[in-house]
Image (cartoon, rainbow, N blue to C red):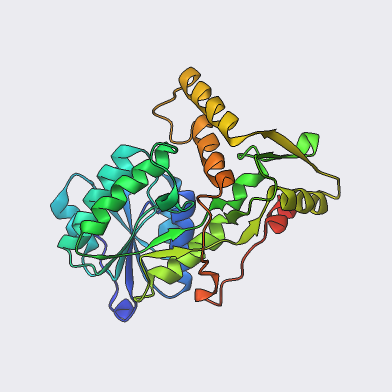
Amino acid sequence: MALNKSSNADKPLIVLAGATGELGSRIASSLLERGAQVRALVRTGSTSEKVGDLQRVGASVVEVDFTNAVALAKACQGAACVVSALSGLREVIVDAQTALLNAAVEAGVPRFIPSDFAIDFTKVPQGTNRNLDLRREFQQRLDKAPIAATSVLNGMFTDLLTGQAPVILSPVKRVVYWENADQPLDFTTIDDTAAFTAAAALDPSTPRYLRIAGDVISARGLTKAASEANNKKFKLFKAGSLKGFGRLIKVTRALFPMKDDVFPPWQGMQYLRNMFSGLAKLEPLDNGRYPDIQWTSVQEVLADR
């Protein structure tokens, strides 16, 4: 394990798991910008180019085997907070995070931020979203552990609107919606989520949940944002009711189960159904908790793509 330099003794240490991912790497950079020490945990034998990137920006990198409880606890020693940005299915979100949680408790770490980063899954019915069900399962374990926990909930990553999320269809100049074109939806960029998470990791007084949205906008609002960002007229397209959407999700999942994929097409469909239902709406928002963070709007993201 890399040792911290004595000159860093007065800087808070944050242990970060999942630091080679899109969100995790940005959390690491934001933490370093805020003056923290970052100890990035990577799986033993990791060959990701981002390991070198982490070291170049000033993070210390520690290879860990998540099945080795003793080594994992040692890797967490001295941390003010353990942050998880892990991404995956049960073996990651439930099993690996539980191992990380137990290690943090064993090491005497006072605070833990899980890899939730989603819509408000605490209000979404069980069984309507596989990935959120896994987060809820881990939540139950986390809430029983003797450690202070804070989940950062950010809605959908705004970045997905530029292609991966089938909502803004640029080739045909349409914005797709289900049920209600005026249902408010929460969006936050990956960068803004990372900046807020870094600030929360260094804040010893965070509550159990922090809810943020870089932009709250309906499908009708998305048509205006897309039109202005592209200087072309976008129109609304109603894809159907939420009940019909649910039937389509069942058919898609039956035809293309893709059980080992983290984000199969039907998973994204489940997420959109949860958002358009209004049940997962984030409120109240904690955007003002760290005033230095400047939130990025949907229109800014669409204009920059």
